[in-house]
Length: 614
Image (spheres, rainbow, N blue to C red):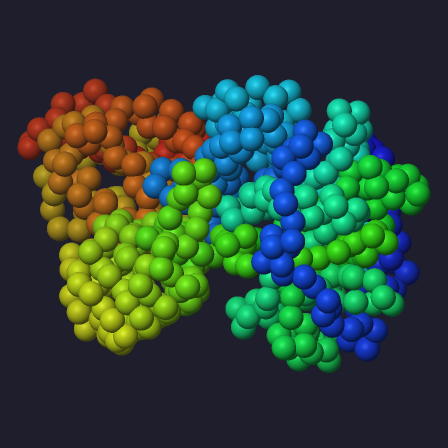
């Protein structure tokens, strides 16, 4: 860790976790050792008894955790850059919230991001559209990383195929080590900053509340957690409890199997951590010094493989900590039970659909609130397999976002596409048992069950199996496959070549499902028809992103450039078909050609497999 330039605070925190694990500690918190948290004041009580003190703003900093990539939702860029309402991303709305508060209180409310090595560059570039925000030289600090531990040797895991896999994030408990190690904590204290409000970047309900800030200051608390009443949807999340008279946080990974029923009993353990935290920075510094340079958080152990995409790779242990667990490190800690307006995170496509719909509205100060007249958010039950990735949800919403402002529960089984003219009221259930997506017809659906299994589907886009046979002499040379145009136009000649290429690319392990296929040519005779064939076969092979040159035109150098310079993962190319016969003449009686370029932009001479089209 020192060789990689990590600060001493991060090393000490990891050492603490490692020694807990190596000594045989499980990190589990037995049910027999805790009691339910009961004496938790409500936000309503706090607001009723507290008069906001705006003078505290000059001693306050707002911090957003922005290190996540949203990989569980199919993203490989900062999750905060995901569009959530119209064209506004989480980051847009957060920046606007900060600017609105500065304007309202005529004070320079301090704002800081904890980015990761993966999110820093994209985030800072995006924020350049807000000069008022990005002009602060101390706008960000970067969280740390820790080594994965070989489960057998207890040494740092090694993976020569991809050394980046040898490291992992240490969990959001790294907040305290990163604040200390980056020098940010000392800078804030030197500037007279005393209070810090922390929340996740994907929780747009978590804004700086003046009554909560004042309550935190007047009660002279060192640490305060915003918690909320648990529901059935929250029963697997960490809960607040009491151990030896001290408030603590117990996460699901810290619960033994035999205690699972008690852990999920929402009538017993009523409060869960929203990850909205208030921290006294001077006392945080005191605790860091007292412990020898770090905050000694309880260790959370996660068993993984060193390469998350390879189940056969080395088994490792990832040691993490939770920032909310610091509640047990402060004698003067407390909690407040807030309502759901302060907790609206996006963890799954369920949440994203709900926020994008008319069930939520954006306030003038850029907060997201339930639409007027809605007593609570609708229960969302999208098919977890069909709508796991953002790309799948985007496809399903290509015709617009359905209305949910009068919906209490929406359940969708199978893959269904919606439109802005679909209106859901009450409890609605939609089922599609067919293998192809179905489009729900426009209309109002109220307290009903709809089965679209037998409805018209994608029609021509529905994959079909076509029998074929190997074609003699269909083997590409150094410049691809070139024949007379009439040969390519005969039977399955082009189809065979395209499918055998797809088969070989699949076998090579290329990411055809999430990345893009580039298609273009030099505009010779049969170019448009050939591109149509390739598009249809690409869709049938599960390719969801295709980049086609305007009017089907893309030169070989242009294709190579496009392959190399695309953006997020779904825009990056796994390869390209180029329809060209170079300097050879074109026309109905002349030459036509096709070649395949791999993901580094160069031509491929794969040994293509002659295969049955499927």
